[in-house]
Image (cartoon, rainbow, N blue to C red; front, side, top):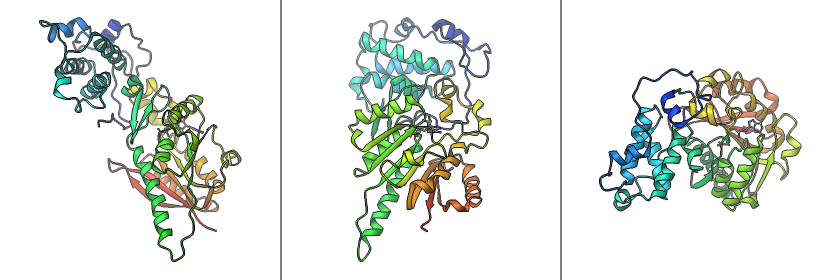
Length: 365
Ligand SMILES: C[S@@+](CC[C@H](N)C(=O)[O-])C[C@H]1O[C@@H](n2cnc3c(N)ncnc32)[C@H](O)[C@@H]1O
C-alpha cells in the first residue's frame, strides 16, 4: 500500500494563487510567501472533466477521474499527485487501494454522488491537506484508525517501533521457556508517552493480546482520538488513557498498574531549527508541538529517560523513535547520567537505512 512521504525535513512548497482564488481558498498557511505561479492551471471545475473525458456519452469512469485529478494536482504543485488522486478515488469506491479495483469498477460510470464526493475531497487535497485528514482515516499496521487534524498522523516507519517491542517480548518469553525451571512471566505492562491517534498503543494491544497499555498525551485532542480509536477497535478494556503532560514528577500518576515492562515513545524530536522547513502539509495542518523537540530535539526524550528508572521493572526497556543524529547524542547523555542505570542496548535502522530506533534498558541492581 502506498504511504505518503515521511521525511520531515523535505520542503516541497506550493503557492498557486490563481487556483486558490478559483476555489476561494485562504493563503495564510502556505509557507514560503505568496509568489505568483506562472504555470498554467487546469480548471478543476467538474464541467471540464466531463468535457475532457467521456462527455460525449455523459460517462465518467474511475480511471478518468484519477487521471484528471493527477493532472490538476501536478499542475498545481501538489506532492504525490498520482497517489493522492488514486487514494481519494478508491476511498470513494470503498476500496483500500486503486490497484485492488477490478476492471469492472475501473471502467463503470461513476454516480453523481461519487463524482461530487471526489470533487470535495480533491479540493481539500488542493489546499495541501494531508490525504489522511482528507479521508478521515488511515491504516497503521493491520488497523484502520480515525484521523483528525491536528492530531499527529502516524508515519509508516513507526510500524517498526511496534515490531521491535513485539520481538523483544517474544525473546523474553522464549528465553524463559528455555530455562530448566521456567518461571511464570507476567503479561507486559506498557506505557506509551505521546500517544497521538493511539497508533502504537492500539497496535501493541492487538499484537500482544495479554498486554495492558497506559497511553498518555498532553493534548486533549490526541487523548480523545485515542479513546475513540480504542472503542472503534474494541480495545478499551486493556488501555488506560490519560491526559497528562509528562514531567520529571510524573512517576506516581503513571504507575497505575505497578512497575512497567516497556516504555515506548515516538516523541517530538525535530530540531527546532528544522521546523520551518517542514512540508506545507505538516505546517498547515498538524500540531507542531507534536514534532518540535526543542533546540537539540531532545526535550521530551530527556524527560522520558530521567523518569524511566522510577517507572521500569528491573531489566525493563525503553524503545524510542528518534532523529538519526540522536543515537550518538543519547549515548553521550546516558554516559553523563550514570546514576540512571540505563544502557543503550541497540540502535535499529528504519526502512531507509537511517538510525531511527533506540532500545535502552534498565540495569538490574
Ligand atoms: C510525534 S507525535 C507521536 C504520536 C503517536 N505516538 C504516533 O507515533 O503516531 C508526539 C506526541 O507526543 C505528544 N507530546 C508532546 N509532548 C508531550 C508531553 N510533554 N507529554 C505528553 N505527551 C506529549 C504530542 O501531543 C503528540 O501527540
